[in-house]
Image 1 (cartoon, protein in one colour):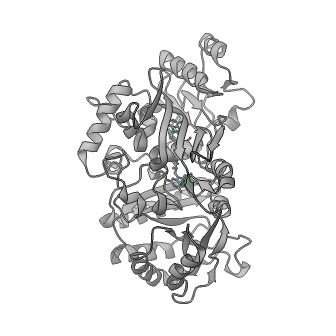
Image 2 (tube, protein in one colour; image 1 turned 180 degrees about the horizontal axis):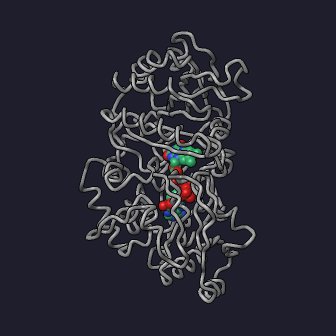
Image 3 (cartoon, protein in one colour; image 1 turned 60 degrees about the vertical axis):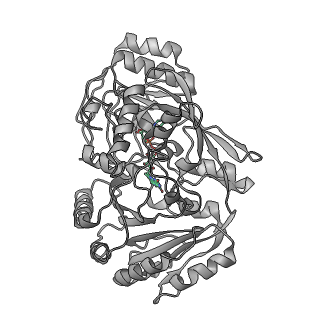
Length: 497
Ligand code: FAD
């Protein structure tokens, strides 16, 4: 449950603290220190946890120091980069947060078309550094999300069908292992570790720096939403299903059901009206994109058509206002092979029941370059799916949050006959079975990951995540038992199941 808990007293042994402070270059934050309240908060306001110590790292030496100290003291370790984990794995009760959010360096090599990115960089910061060269790493759809967590789980976004997932652009990762060693993993150095980092990365070490391949993008794309009344949802989705069957990979779409938000681009008379939107991003020649988009834009009688040539950077930011820091979020995800009639009807039914003006459900189109990478080439699961749905229950405070959560759960359950896997970065704390589903139906992929975990993190130091138990051990249960113990006195875990 995400309910706010009373402040939890957190103890930290003074001598242990001073021992770390001697070798740590960043400014350590303990309960009672001025920045503590702000620094323990993450993006999801429903998460309310009290770590014993926050270790804001200035570089890989700090990561090594904080991690070794945590292992020696037995403190649970949470790793924070962008702080956007839905279930709040990047903060813990009573343990240590290894916080990489201040590690912000981005170095673009436009000739080689590569970029080196430190772990604290956010998607918008990466795009801002690469777009002046007409280049980009495919990433996610909200600019304040962290590159690190998104990439290590996969990374779905507006360029996925053209160039693949974020993880498919990775050339190497520099990481600190559970044993405190600095390792570079790539196709030639530690290739098996590199395989596992690409989809289950948080389980094997703390990444300090990524090297990505860059791709030509924009700077102009043909992009934006076309809106119909939600009563048209069933018809729009059926037409959409047939239309996308023939569209080129330059086009990636997301269908969103929600109440029209009060944004400047939307006429005030539509504010709060339930709508279904087909949102496009055509990353190719604009005239060709206009032709591809035409049938969808001409379908029925749209309320509004905002699809037009615009800077890629502007399109990347279109959802930012809908997901600010500090609101209360409860999400559930599921993959869908295709848009079966029953799934379409269920979506239409639950769209009509949306209560909160903030809730909704984006349906990501997959295929294209995502599906062209082999299922066994990276640890990412579920590459072959047609769509990934993410049901978002959102309130700006705790008020009404329980009702949103109920709507999300009921909707998700009603879709169960159509579920086909799930994207690991769209999981809450949903248990071992769901983590299995995230790594695909192939049991041997999970076995391979468990063997890798036993090699690189046999003690399961990195367990506050979608946990892969080391071969020979049982699952730790992310966010549950993993939160307990360590240097601090543990309070009620602010879990969001
Ligand atoms: P954090 O909370 O900092 O980290 C999450 C977890 O990742 C950590 O618990 C840890 O296990 C691991 N991790 C983080 N940093 C490191 C590191 N340096 N080394 C090792 N492990 C690390 N996903 C998409 O694919 N596409 C989207 O369009 C998309 N949109 C989103 C929009 C919003 C508003 C939010 C909140 C999430 C979105 N996501 C999307 C999901 C996103 O990919 C995950 O929430 C991801 O974990 C966020 O990464 P982070 O670095 O911000 O999170």
